Image 1 (cartoon, rainbow, N blue to C red):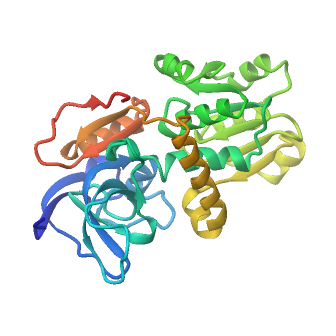
Image 2: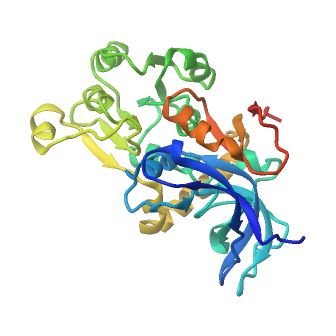
Length: 343
């Protein structure tokens, strides 16, 4: 195929949030270097990390102006030197820089084939949300018969965690805003609580016979963080922290000694990939096996045209979305949001 010299892309112009993300039409199409592949983006994933970067709160994040986005799936259209696979024309998903665009570079070694029977849009989350969910459960030591509290259970990572926790025989308490409760229950959660409740830890204790949960998957941050610590069982309870959507929350050694005697674990999937590649390989192997077995199925994602990326991120920031969000950069994509049904 003929690769143009320029492309459409979303450029972040400041660190004041997604309102300063604008569509440009003259971004240069990148050329693959050694060990890289160029994909024609079919779908790009939207993540909370994109919001953090737009506000300048993501550690070592890019400085504006920059092409936004880091997760995409599409067809390989060019190969760099020394690349022996995957092949031209292969549909792959990966993470890199500048995903909110018509074309994107990926490291060839980290370009993962789209699973059989899945579209590129279905594959969004395969290297971000799904491994984050499984890693959180593994690092948290979840066993069958235990109880887990999953915050933001209607989001992409929360949905995956709910499905995986139920598959492993756990009791799941999810949190979400009231309009999303049916979605969470439909995933198999045993209970769902209002994420904005001011007595969230009290309600969790009521559901667990006043003992608390064995594991908390904490991505909410802000004022919810205190509820997460209080909701975990004393001494044996674990809290895995992998997000801070609601902002930073302080915790001190005094808190852990005298107030919340729990086990606190931090998780960043990017750090895990680089610092513990063997563990990441095991996680991906387990995920692909679960996909092959039909435990993890192609999900429903809400799609927006590339030009509406700023609005999509604003909706995510306002907690007005459910599940995975995708940008479709193809020229002529419908401007109206739509959902991909399960096959």
